[in-house]
Every structure is written in structure tokens, then in C-alpha cells.
Image (cartoon, rainbow over all chains, first blue to last red; front, side):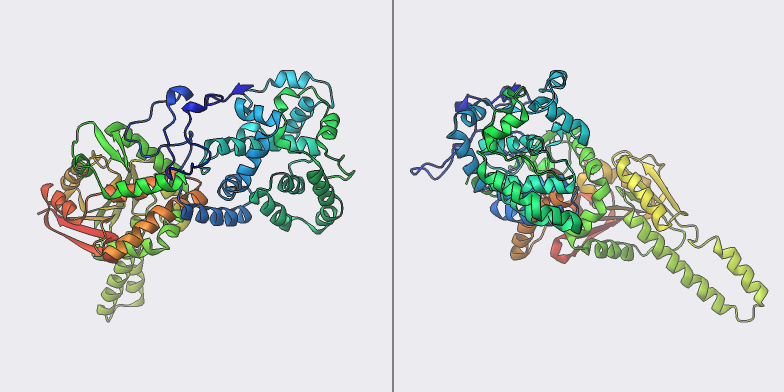
Length: 275
Length: 310
């Protein structure tokens, strides 16, 4: 489990999370690259990036990006980067809510402090594969292998203008595969739509809401029927009943059985349909 | 809030360029420091970064050009070729011609001129037999370009690859060659070409003075130098709208269509760093060209500079 270099040392980071009443300006400092073991930026570099990969954008640019990425994501569903950009540019209200939910929960607060990352380099795949069937770690690895996905393909955030919120959205993206595991949904279009419904209820991110609403347009009528009659009601019920899924320190729960984790969170067992 | 402030800082700094950058802008040997968009880098870094930019954008280059300029770049390039007015037998060197836009237009133009030539020739031969007419068509069929040739030279392998694929797709085969080369050090002999064009490429050259000297070298006496490039808008209202569009919309288009924000950010910044019309005219004159002149298109958004080697 890798600790994010900015963890804990909040005095050395970049921006305050809320502007104070007395000064309208936020005091922003560039991240010192010795912290992150990156090559030193030149003094004349324009962008005082709040985090590596950050691209500062104006409100107009964000609006254009949101519109453009929405259209492109619908036009070409394989453009996952567009879905990510849509999430970042429209999440300005939902992300602070999520962050506050995490802060007010002991496990979530620990996650925000330690900033763990789920990556192939940090996961001990051999150990996870050796865990008993039905445990979170074993089922997660099985999900990755069956669907031929990897946690390293998640895009890092670029357009979020607060480094803590950037971590929150990064965490949400990395936990997405675990959502698939917990809900038992594969990575085909139907499974993705179901997970989006669940996430829309849980996180309130507009990108999830849009994905849940517009995702089904590309499904066949038979699948739509299954979706509407069984899967979506179950996803909504589970989403409303479950506690915040980002407040779970998954890296410390690989041995826990999936069923027990589902019960703990409040996710109902998936309906017996073939997805 | 932070982002708005950062963005405003960048815009303010846009208006106040440091004096030291002027020499760098002229593309002269400004010591080791040069500009890459609004960043300051060494010469070698600049070459590498620009190479990477075009490597990244090569596949989506044409789509992006159409969407950024709303298709107007096609008109600009047409105007350039019409200004060139090549006759059959012209040898053209198109530098930084990557995806072949100018080369294909040149071939089309020369072909149509050649067609008209042949038709006129036939009209004058009033009393040819059908056999003679057929033979003359045969002879000229293999000469539809009238010995014109275009050499497309680009420093970037990816851009040339895309250009070659386009040529195959559109059916251009004769009269076209593709050469990998650096505009600052062209792999050609002296006094070889009739026309030298560089369309939207000279901005990316690290040493513009060297490129101009090379252009002078490879042109025949009487040869023409033509440069199509983004330039400075004098009209203040249009300039503000243009800046707004450039900085707000173009990087967004780059992100949405090509998935690459930074390359298009570099593009709009490099346009601002490029010397204005009069300065470029002076640089072309310094390289030895005569009758140097420029024509503004769209109020200065784009300018065509022309000079002759006499």
C-alpha cells in the first residue's frame, strides 16, 4: 500500500480548502518536486500546478469542456478519458460533499490522511490470488482477470482545482472496479450502467447521473427490460441503503468475505439475472 | 477561485512580455534559453518538445485543423497556391509539409493548368487526323503534370507517415516525394527548386534565421519563397476576440477531439510568441531575399510572406 507523498504534511501542500473571509485571494504555492521525486520544474514555468498533471482552467473553459466531453462520450463510448473529464468538470458541488462525508467518518478520515492508491505496483497480486474464494481480494483479482482490466488505466485528474478533491476523485475512480466486484457486475455495457446507477445515488456526481441516464440508449430492448425491471430498482435500493462506499479502507480488508462486506455496507444481494 | 486567479495571472502576463524574450522570439541565437510557448527552455529541449507535440497530434492533425479554424485553413492554403500560380514544370519544395496539404493542392493546380494547356494546343491543331489526335493524347497522358514535382520535407516521421497514407488514400502517386529533413539544415543541393513554401511550419522552427538561409540556398535564382503563417492581428476588437477564442476554446477542442490539451496550449502560445509581419519581413530580407512583401488574410490572423531570390 503506497502512501501518497503529500499525506499528513498539510503545511507543505498547495491550497486551503476554503477561502477565508478576510482575504479574497488564496495563497497558492507550487508543490516542491523533491517531495514527489519528480524533475525540478523551471522557475519560469507558467503553471503553478496544484498537483502533478493539474491544468488550471477558467470557468468558461470548464463549461466548454463539460459540454464537449459529454457529447464526445456519447458519440464514442470508448473515450473513457472524456467520461473522466466530464466527471472532473461537473463535480464542483458533489466532490466537496463527498470529501466532507469522508472527513466525518473515522475510516474515511484515515483514507484522506494516508492517501492510499490502488495500482498494480502496490497490490500484492500473488497474495490476493492466494486468498480463499469469496474473499474481497480473491474476487477482485478474479474480476480483473475475467474482464481483462487493470487498475492502472484510470486517468489521473487534470481539471480539479483542489488537490484534496483531486485525490477524492482519483480514489473514486480506483474504487470503481471494487464496486463492480461488490455488486457482482461485469464490465459490459449493462453492468457499467448498473454500477453507474449505484454510484449516482452514492456519490451524487453529475457524471454518474448522466451516465446512468444516457448509458442505456445503446442497449438492446431485452437488456433494457432486464435493466428496468430488476437491476435498476436493486441498484437504487442498495445505493440508498448503503453507507458511503468511499469510507471503506479496502486495502485493509482483502481477507474479508465479500458477503460480509456487503452486509456491513448495506448492499443487498444482487438479483439472479445473467448480465 | 484559485483557478480563476491563476488564469487571470496568466492573461495579465500575456500582455507584458519580458524584453529578453524579444531576441528569443526572433529565433536568433539567444544563448541557451528559448521559448516553448510561454515557457523558457533550452534550444535542444525546444526541438524535442516540438517533435513530441507533432508526434502526438499527427493522427488527428487534419481533424483538429478543420475544427479549430472551422475549415477556413483550406481557404488559406488555396490562396497560397493561387498566389504561387505554378506552371507545369515547376519544382516545389514544401518544408514542414507533413500531411501534404500544400503538395496535393499544388498537384491539383498544375494538373488543371496542364489540362487547359493541352486543350488549347489541340484547339490550334485544326486539321489533325483522329490518329494524330489519339497519339498526342497518348504522349501527354504520361505527362499530366508536365514534369512538375513536389518534394515534401518534414522533420517529423509521424507527420510524414500520415501524409503518405493520405496520398495513397486520395490517389496521388506521381510527382510526389517525401523526405525526412530539418528546415535548418536541408538535405538538398544549392539552387535546386523553383518555389519554396512553408505553411504553418516556420513558427515551430527553433532557428528561423537558419531556416531562411537554407531556403535562400536551395532556391534557384529567380526562385520564390512563400511563407504562410499565423501572425498578429492589428484590429483591437478582433484581437481580443481572437485571443479569447484561442486561449479558451482551442485547448478545449484539443482535449475533447485529440485528448491532448497541452499540445494545443503550446500551439496558441507559440502563435503569440512568433514575430509580427514587419519583423518577419525584415528577417526574410536579412536572409537575402528581394521584393519581400506580405499579405494579411482575415485581418492578420494569417499572413503570406513572399520573397524572391534574385
